[in-house]
Image 1 (cartoon, rainbow, N blue to C red):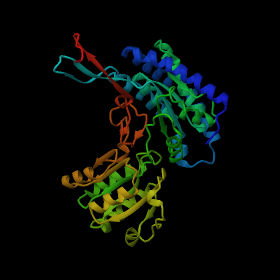
Image 2: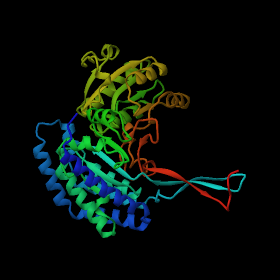
Image 3: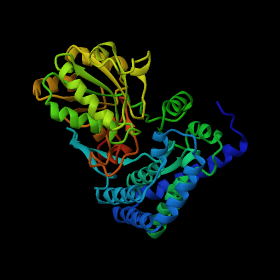
Length: 421
């Protein structure tokens, strides 16, 4: 636990109070103002692409010695910057989540009660290497009427600052307060501790990163947390799977981008089809540069594969490494997932609808898929425009967290002079 100096505490309080004042303005902002801020920010991202790439190149230079997967998460390209801008435009096109009537009903005494969506307030976002989180979090919080205080990892500091400058330009153009989206003014690790203890100043903390970050946040926070666990995701190839589909889905689920939290980390395959199909699946992935950690039953079919060590099935590789286990049917697959999974994302490949329904009912994961890649666990793919994270808790929100999940609610009670007896 990092000691928090008076200076760091004062810096945090100044930033958080500015965010709270900005949040009060955002809560009353109309949709056109918020949408204009997002559209101007998207235009700024495209116009300042060269400056963003230059900042990112500096970050990458200082990130030498890190894994290929980590560098991939850190790297920005023209295509990724354009995707960020498109994400802001997609969020702008979505309905305003604030002020929605979620439910309403009349009481026998004539009172009309309405449950109405409202902003959370001030959100503290703590993330690691992905600079695109800056744009995603800013867009979603802004549209949902909340201010956000962003504390990214030092590895992405230059890239994140350049992206935040584009968002600030959008806020200025729309006449909204720049303090609605702030980067932490210091990289001092104690600032994270100050955020976690800022009850009354910050309303919700969202950590997005590795196990170490999430564990620290959960242990130290005195502010409510919307957290996600590791992406210990499984693809289960059922005995009734179409072989060609299984090959295509698994290759994408593992190798499209190995460093994203929706990547498959473990293949489970039914014993009945493993001897014929497993060599094809492994051959496809090996051709894409994948390595393997195999259980004994897998190695009986493919003895050249590396033996899975204790703990491998509980490892989120975020790299071109796949665990493989042969299982005896649905119940064994579900037991394996319950033992090693993180309730993030799990998929089944099968042509048997009843088996698919049994699998989806049997997992506790935030996202379950039938005949689709686990990498579809993504706010953009869900139609949210972007996501602020993948929640695996059981309260408030689960799965990709978009605009609706970034709102809370309150009640409006409309009367005609009623008094309580």
